View 1 (spheres, one colour):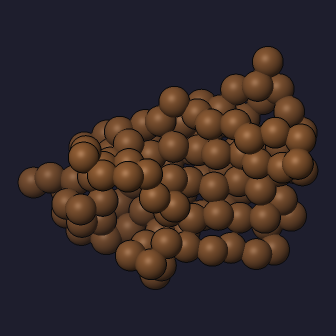
View 2 (cartoon, rainbow, N blue to C red; view 1 turned 90 degrees about the vertical axis):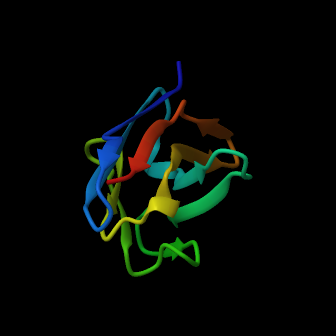
View 3 (cartoon, rainbow, N blue to C red; view 1 turned 180 degrees about the vertical axis):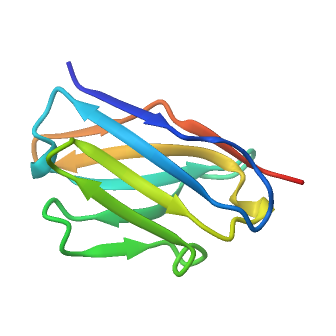
Length: 116
């Protein structure tokens, strides 16, 4: 059974940092492109960052580059998102996604709230 379980969300003050994790199971993690997406209330889901299966290429959404860092540990089947200098507009549910020609899987999300 495929599972993607996000964790690490919560309440953080503007300018603070947070690290999200996505634990994967039930598929060959190291063969999948992994990404983080987010959806704020009343808005469409958007790409935060994506990383290739080998971790050799990374892309970021426009407003995230320079503040967020995506990484993966294929030995631990885990995807990470380090969020620094967060802003109130970063408030959203953050989702983990795994995609390859064999499948497209989503986690249930973790809520990040940026507020003082």
